[in-house]
Length: 293
Image 1 (cartoon, rainbow, N blue to C red):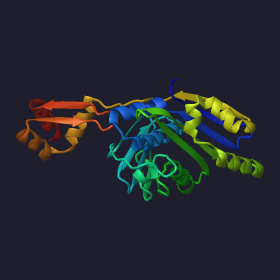
Image 2 (image 1 turned 135 degrees about the vertical axis):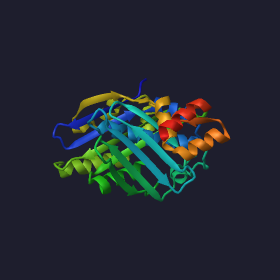
Image 3 (image 1 turned 90 degrees about the vertical axis):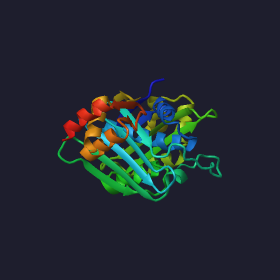
Image 4 (image 1 turned 180 degrees about the horizontal axis):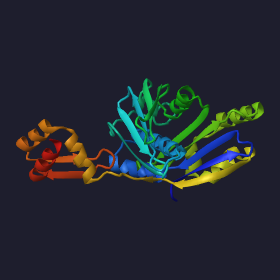
């Protein structure tokens, strides 16, 4: 089944919800970065959230970067997305791992760290990107993102993100939802919503049982008479290219390029997001040095 995200709103226009399945995206990321089970879960949750938030953006060229920097062994987690359903990401330490928690679940909060920053960068093609930030509270990513929406965007939101890792370490199921309540919501609906969200099973369990985003919407929030407004396929996509990496080499400056030419006579640049290696020989580096001047 393909990964995709849906956007739905209730008939009173007081609740909007985005639901995504991302099993293939998370598995692609796991294979590219060779992540440990706990890192697969942490990166997978971040990719899912970023894919949904990218889908929330309006412009064709808008770009969203979600960065999580906790005090745990994983280091930085970065995911970049847009409204076309393209998503990519990486972590600083893909092999970081911790024993499972006492309840048998992967210790995502421990590997991410419970103090640090969550940063959202929205590049809307203006002079300056919009940057929002909040403190991590649990490192579980869903809770931290809900906190971000309230503190940085004044938007009350419920965030559920889940990744189920199989015995062979592959991604068994992944996905999530972001639900946002709008100012005109009636008190009784708000209470009903809160009760429903508090009783929910892990979202990845529903996806593992074969639920599609549409079926999840009906199963979890059917009583609110939700109407699906939009749908978009999600794919792990890296847009790196030789030209882009040339730009990176030029940006390191003349001195650094001279050093590369003198010491190694060549350079290899690896893309963080897809691990593609780009080799530049001495002649190519000399041409880039001219451009750097």
